[in-house]
Image (cartoon, rainbow, N blue to C red; front, side):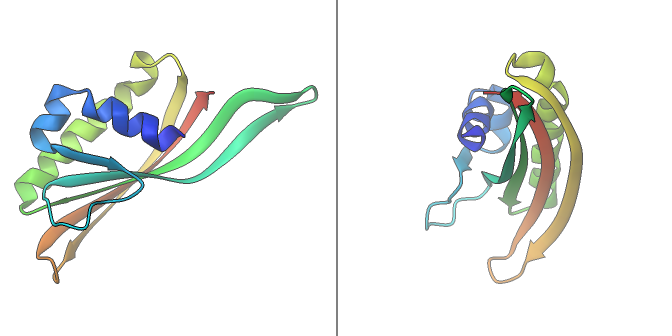
Length: 125
């Protein structure tokens, strides 16, 4: 499960934990703890060859993060961008990361800023 692996890698980075100490995979706790980050997998495709599965997978990952201020959102975005831009260099299992797309928003009910980052990761299982 690539979303669990990505959230574990994020939790191991001191710079990331400094800006967003609450990092989860798939679900969030019911309490409001900001800043917070959630990693989800939207889908996975298994690469095939004529001989069967190649061992490579392509996953679309969504990273949602919330914070009380735009400065916190900006700091999280900076750390995530650095992390994903160097992921294929730092992790042997990751072959490439591409198609990073962002969507900022504001959630008035909770009075928090939200940013969604969607990307594609090709990795070896």
